[in-house]
Length: 389
Ligand SMILES: *Cc1c(COP(=O)(O)O)cnc(C)c1O
Image (cartoon, rainbow, N blue to C red; front, top):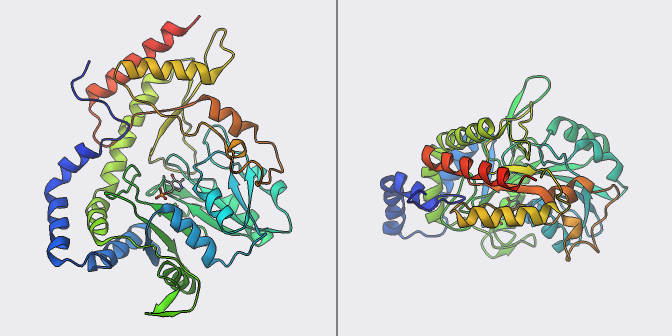
């Protein structure tokens, strides 16, 4: 056993590595006492825009707000349909529903967990207005075919980049773009466990369109440009100055953090490759992978009829031995009580349903030691071996 408790993500360890820089940045904000819209908010937004190579970054309160503000800025109207992947975090479907729009679910590619572009076209109707491409677990959706279909049908593409900031997509012609900068609007979340994270809630939108950036900024600020003059119906969604200060420090280290997670993933890849009971996450040829999650699929051998039950018992045994694991996500959207009656599902969602039964995310973070990693791998392999019939 190792002394330190293994965690899915080690925020405390990461803080201590950056303590001096972060304490100084936070102290500066507290001394200035400009807690809302302090200069650090603009500085961080500018630095993030530069990092992503996009003209406009507008910060907001969280990643879910970012998606909602994006759809509001695109002036979608009740009854309009928005395509979302069936296997994802709920936020996109939630804001679609809140705005009176209809979520249309599309199945995913079981190897990459991202929306399957080959299944988008059959889901488009006269009412379809947008596609939300969620870059899940750390790598980009296949954007070239998605953008092509969107172009043919005049649809907006919004990229939900909460999990994959820093990942790069290579177009067939060789152009390389960072995720979140290829659609009309990109959104992200700075929730503490995300790849670029603050010490609470935070989010941002990014776009190359100046008019759109202006409208996004207005909507996030009560629909006003001039104080107390409300041109649009908006909301109140801000990134606190303290969080911006923390983010500005962490942004300087983002590529280092990515490399640390990639090294952990490479170790998992190598050590688990020959284990017949696991299907490892596939790296797409067109995208880098920043490994927000390292998510495997269980393929139990022997008599197992219920993979989800097998997974539950495996998780329990690992937990007893000090190894946390997570299931992202135990239900596809079509099976969620709140959405099953309202989402349109033109195609079948078999892959999303299957993934929900067999996915398992292993611990991966910037502070993981070689010793921890070895312990996780050895214990996992032994558990799988013991369960083989
Ligand atoms: C975390 C997450 C969100 C929501 O972000 P919050 O900041 O928690 O509102 C949206 N989409 C995806 C894919 C996420 O992982």
